[in-house]
Amino acid sequence: MRRPLVCGNWKLNGSIGKTGQLVDALSCGAAGVEGVDIAVCPVFVHLPLACERAAETALAVGVQDVSDQDQGAFTGEVSAGMAAEFGARLAIVGHSERRARHGETDAGVAAKFMAARDAGLTPILCVGETLAERDAGDMLAVVTRQLDAVLEVTGVTGFGDGVIAYEPVWAIGTGRTATPEQAQEVHAALRERLAAHDTALSEGTRIVYGGSMKGANAAELMAMPDIDGGLIGGASLDADEFLAIARAAVAA
Image (cartoon, rainbow, N blue to C red; front, side, top):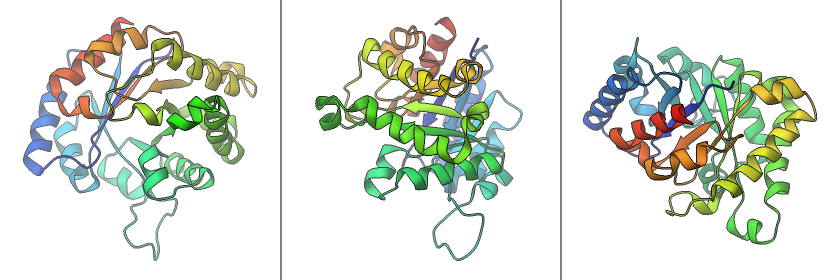
């Protein structure tokens, strides 16, 4: 039985005051929700604050990106090891916004996935297709290509402590959501891709859905057999809404 994961991606949002308040609310709320891993990923500058406020609670803290380098002349970069020193436990890699805005390649994302693993963080690999790619019928080819790039570097064992997040680009921040059946089709294909290498590991790997998941649709999405939680954007900035998603994950 895979333990669900509900992880909030706060993107470029928050302040010292708001981050502290939200972490406090979620830390308190998470204590009453058993059977699911709950995490949030604030901006880097708020990482120490979030880790301090969430210490010794059921709320885990992660980061939205990491460098593929450990140290050196890489201006503006933050390494996975540095994040781990502050108490980060997870790292999102390959989010579509970074692929699009920063030109991150499949190979570069794979290197970040490996860097996160090497630092002891749980990497969350984001994969997903654009609307044009879906309309062309290429969604499975796109997500398997993105997954294969990581498999080539880490082997299937790299997902022994990793997570995959399916985020259809056309459903991120748009209010549109893939139907449960559309999401399940892609999740099942990703699990099948892993199973081609190792069936047992595939069955244990968590594959979560991202793309306008909220309290109102979370239960329906997570009732699908291969959807193991969510990577939540805007809804994670509201404690009540985010905790409703976490409770839906347990019920599913």
